[in-house]
Image (cartoon, rainbow, N blue to C red; front, top):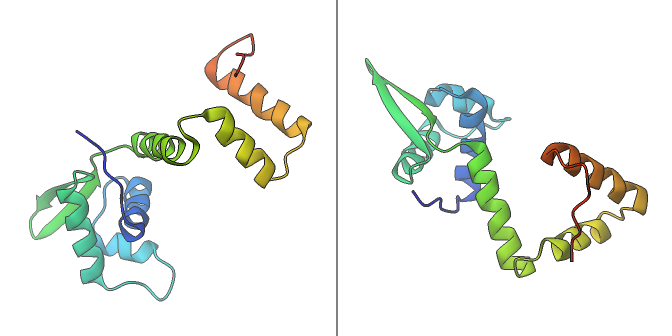
Length: 130
């Protein structure tokens, strides 16, 4: 299944679905800060998310129970890949440099990032980035 881009409202609702794992419309509405969106608005967004393949719906009596059909990790990976491709011509070093400049990171910060990446990847040797 191809993952598609979500609107801001869809992504906001989806964040709550990922957080709650299995949920009903009312519980999603309750996650929002005041002023909360209308119940029907959230129900409509969940229906759209179901049509897009992001949530699955299970009916229990008169209640619809929604759960994620796409993991947050898979959507994050899709978003990251899209960002890399669309804004940095697929170049991770260009993207990393952009974020380093924008966040005024110094060499120590970059070394910390590299060390954390090595630990995540389980590599003993740093990988040369060209």
